[in-house]
Amino acid sequence: MRRLSLKTTIDITFLVIVVCFAMLAYSIHNRSQSVKQNRIIVNHTSNINSVLEKVLSSTIDIETGTRGYTITGDENYLEVYNHGHKNLEIWIDSLRSMNETDELQIKKLDTLEKLIDSKKKISAMVIQARKESGMEKAAEIVKKGRGKEVMDSIRKSIRDYQNQAVLILTENLSQTEENVKARNNNFFLFTGITFIILIFAYIKIRQTTQRLLLDKIIQENLMDELTIQNQQLNDFANITSHNLRSPASNITALIATIEENSPVEEYRMIFDMLKKVAQNLNDSLNQLMEVLHIKKNKIVEKELLAFQEIFSKITESLQGEILKSGAIIKADFKEVQEIAYSRIYLESIFHNLISNAIKYRAEDRTPEITIRSERKNNIVYLYVIDNGLGIDLAKNGHKVFGMHQIFHNHPEAKGIGLFMTKTQIESMKGKISVASEVNIGTTFTVMFGT
Image (cartoon, rainbow, N blue to C red; front, side):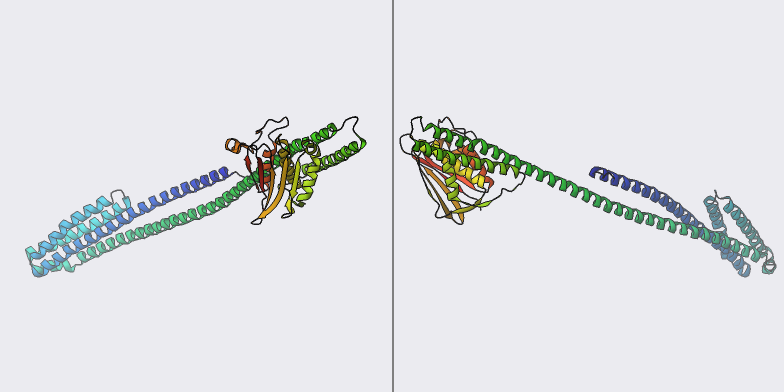
């Protein structure tokens, strides 16, 4: 199954959250509209009940005014009666305006209004009888009980009206509560789903990020390994072209020292030297081939090497140049005799520094080369000192270890040896420096890495 990319995961997560949010918003909107409608109904019902109470209160005022005037004849009770009449008209009109779109309520209101009209008529008859015929006549009308029956009917009608309104109110309150609860449930559901989606997306994004980081690390490691291998292969090519050229030159130089009439002893001596040069050349080729097979390893293999052994091998390889130049080479490895290092690198360092000292010798004096080792602060140093042409460091000091930098005319100068030596030393965490005076000599100091 194909893995989703980081961008696709983010896009899908965002889309799902938007869809969930839209559904929640739609649901909340519908619930809110229902709640709003129910609140209107609740308010409307509450107002109707309030007006019904006032209708009943006004009707009672009519009843109270009528009875008070009948019993006492005090016309102050007629004010209560008249006040009830006026208020009834107001409240009945209010009820009609509040229920003008509800046919069922209008029918109930018509019935109530008929009862109220009957009550008004009976009350008017009682008051009229009290005014014209006295209390006894009015009392006879009251005793018939018609007024009480109508009043009871009004109370019952208003009570039924109110009970129905309360029922509607209860239903709407229940619906409102359900809508609010459903809205809250939807919100919590949305929150839960969103949280789960975010957690899932976080895990996926984290996994994808880790995978990308791992891929990046692998790529960086591959790049580092490729860079190191390219460097090592470049070193191999430089060592091959530079170090093998010198033994070939030495063989040529040794052969050039003898002539057809040279004595047999000289032939034998030169032949022995040629054998050593050839043997060293063969060893160098074998070592280079071995290095070529292990170049895929990022770590340069180290082994315990004796300075004297490496020195002897290199000077044997350079016998032709040494004889031709008459160079005197002295070595002192008493202070530090061994070092853990790459064999091919150490041989290359010795070879380049000694061959350069011979190559750039002064023509007016015998070449003298001194090589010694030293330990300071637990760090091993190697010094190669000559009395050759020297280098103008004020002019060329910054270019000494550069590629293809040549400071003296010499037919075999390529400007590669010191650059390669510096690269090899630094790859082993070491450093190389130079001190020199023109026509006095040069000292190369190698600080081996720990």
